[in-house]
Amino acid sequence: MEANFQRRAPGRTRVGSIKDSLSPKGTIKKKKQDRKTKERQTQEISNLNVLIGRLEDRDTQQQAFATLIECFPGLGPSTVKEVYALIEKNKKPGRSSTRRMLVLLIAALCRCHPVQSAKLLPRILSYTCLRLRDKHAKTTDACVILVSAIALYVLPCPTISLPDAGSTTQPFEVVAAVFAKETSAVGEAATRCLCGLLHPVDFDGVSVPGPSTILAHAVRIRPFFKNLLADIVAKMDGSTMFATFSSLFLLLQSACLLARDAQEKGSFTQLGDDFAPYISSIYEAIEDSFQCGPRDNWMLRKRGLELLTLVLDVFALQESVWCSTVEIAKESEFEPSCSLAAMIRFLSSAKLPFLLQWRLNV
Image (cartoon, rainbow, N blue to C red):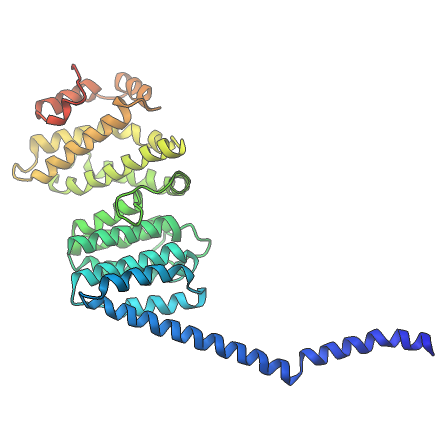
């Protein structure tokens, strides 16, 4: 009898525990917890909606913006989509400062909640293009920050919702295609977003991300980087459409800056290796734009000179790993007119004051 009781006791205990877990009391308690959680989330969304509405008021927008930025890191994953919808519904804010802040809020969402933002990427890109059409300088700056956040935090996610971009499924190519289509509508503002995709900036719009972040970005973007360089140089080679070179020079500046930062911050030299073979063609395009380009296009000349001085600084004048590569290349592969000395003579003939600080004797 005692043995039988001992054998049955565990069984009766298990049945009892199952009954307890399925008891009406346990179910009611769980429903109450779920209801409280939902009510709390609803109240949180309501409070955030009020703060977003205050962005339209000049007297309250700064405080509201700062409060929203502080709240975003603590958002639950399930509320990110709802918060984005609150931002997205503001299609035509009255103030340019409000439009800028809305874009920066989306950038903060991408940084704080990249996995959830990756599922919203087509909508985020669409809203970015809408804000580019405002054609306001500070709003465009905010869009560049947003694209930078997408490049650094969203695109590395394992699962990304991508807009329809034809045959390509590479994230960087898909995002670049979106802004390339906008070029005819918004002009160089779209090119600046492409620059942000190439050479991302931090949330302040100026600082470069830390070493580990920029290294990871350089590794991820390299296939797109190589294809983009080849496409840009192919567009310039033999072309007489010099007015289009200004945007291309801007993209090449960003590519050169990324190669420099990847090497300096992460000891990643591969991007510089990919860039170096095109220096000859880049120099020739700059020289042709000066000799044959529109005389009244001062921006074209300015960007050409900025690009050439940057290339010289990164690949020839600094103590970089590519100095010897460029020296060898100029003797064996480059045209005689594209030697390092020829480039510096070209700059000297422009009588640029910043050449004095180099103290070069050509």
